[in-house]
Length: 370
Image 1 (cartoon, rainbow, N blue to C red):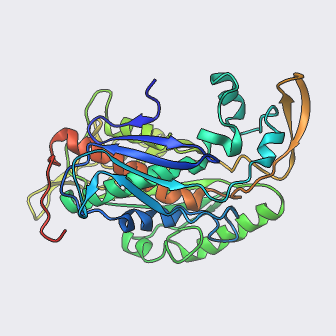
Image 2: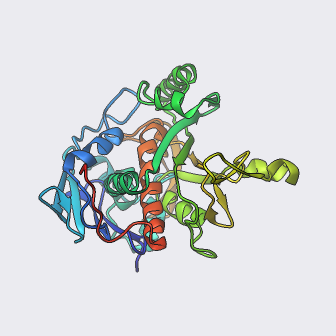
Image 3: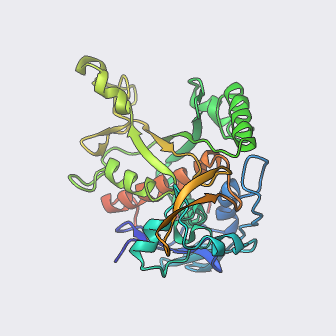
């Protein structure tokens, strides 16, 4: 059983449950010599922290990270890095009452079957979005490593909530806007409509999903280990570990199915710097499961939050009779905005593992500026 770990050379193992004592991660394989402080991780955790606005869960968690090992005198040592966040604002009363009536859309039933009724059912336990704290911790380390050693920059943002879509914008425009609104969208006008939609479904006791786009810049060509450990395969595996993800597409994605080859093919040319480039990027920066040096582009579909304030049918696992359940607890009417930094994080640690496997990141790094 190895389902709680990801990666071969930059390997992460996550632990903790929604209402347990803590959530955290062990990162093994991080090179020695990377300047790392708790503040580096904290700024990423603050982006996904609950209770930040009226359109997120009211659960109040400071999510203050503690690094327990693997860092000495401000630098990584090459030993496993263990870091965690303590759970503080926990109320399990509702989950105790519904223990044997699985909530529609949640993993309550499948977890009950898989683990014979022994799984932690409080707040979704191991299947809660709360576990993404550990993803963001690992991602913060990976993002700094990629940026310092390879100059890779990863940027995720909301492009759709429900039927509200953002217009196409440049990377610089998106960078300037995503932290200026509650939904982390690069289009201010669309962001306003998205917030209004989320507030509307919240008042109705319902929820809504959306789409996150992510672009990784300066990704070196050659990443990927075909045929099974392709870039798409490794990224998709990491992304699908995020609760609520229901779809991933790269480049043109499903639109490729209606394009002609003459439209979809990215033709090559030699740039002024002597590097091989393509005129378009329908491939999303990947050919044959290997990065080609163009921006890596992908989109992630996030489902509506499963817990809603409307009566739904379920089954009492003890009596085997159909009953009605009303969702309670503290949940986001839309998890997309808080999922944005999580998607960035899983992409970061997946790319880091591939980069180390290719030999682009050494076991010891030396940085003049720290």
